[in-house]
Length: 546
Image (tube, rainbow, N blue to C red):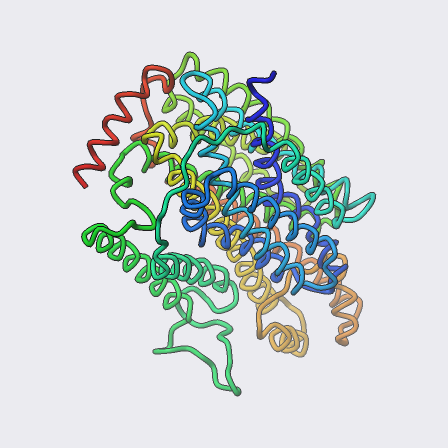
């Protein structure tokens, strides 16, 4: 037990980091009510929590090299605990955004790369494979437990106690952190501020553009922002492609900057040459796709269950329970399989199951989601995500030298959280945007009076807000609709939500299929023990060639 003390402490921190990305999703409707905000605002807060981490994770990894990995871990844990406390006390969405999306995110960028590097520092050979598998399983357990913990605490106490609990857990981690060995030597490295700005702003622009697509439109402007009554639609287009292209340009300049720094003998923020390592490239790509799908599921399912079906937080968590239990079980199964199967075989099995799960879920969408088919789809999704979680951390870390583990830990954090950000932004925007389009379309083609159609059209100029189906009739009657008209609008709105959910599941299915292409270079031999040396030698040679 003493041998595994370090991974238990690191695993506790990992549990909190991952828990925060799913625990709030089942509490969306309650937080919306408590803070007098909207689902779209909560989507923004959820997205920017992971985006903050993705945007500055490389800086966090570099600071770990400068300060020492355990010191960075401790500082990050303290910052994270402060953010959790602020979030728990938040009186409004602005303070929640500051505490959760910003301060907690900044703490996490120091903790997450340090976890990866300290795990490598404390274990070697087969023990290291096991330690990374344990961390992966804990991540899977956190994803799975988030809805149940959030649902129970929110229903019987308050969502705020989730964040107070995180403060307590991080205090325990800090109390026993000396159990974690750190033999690394702090390095005297000058951080390139321009590189940090280019990467951070580039990622923010891309994700923010996707986030706003539900309102502004993807290509043609739908509900563009206005300044002094003037609509902002350059060249007759939505701002979304400008944000995405602008972000892509900044990321390209970031790559150019890293190459320039190497030429002049200055340390880059990230060694671009590492992306030539096929195994690392494959592992990071599959990881990003996995977290995009996970984030998409954990955003749209709770929103639908709560805002359409009117379920409370605990009932929502229980509805997701098949995914939760299978994710935990198959994380353990995947860990055991590493002794017999190569990583690619396990990852490909997980990806194929995930495609099947997406198709099951797409076919099961109905007004009440009470079908056995939906439960089977959720169980399969959890099984797939569990298998992937058990493999990818070790695939990434075993692709490089021990000296590069901190940097790869940062890259892993970037891709993990970028995937989560894109998943929440993309799927959330598809869900909300298709709801708006579908609802307005069905109202226009219905037999409702022209006055009602006109009123609905005028009232949704800025888009359709997700509200509980049970409240639609009351809203309509307050706007002057008759009881019969209000009932018809309720039916049209609920049908539109079902259609929006179907389209969102279709997008998830496409992502799952595309991710299968990314796993081509996942190792076909067992990863661990003596198998690591050749890969590390390859990594050294490729780094030298670069």
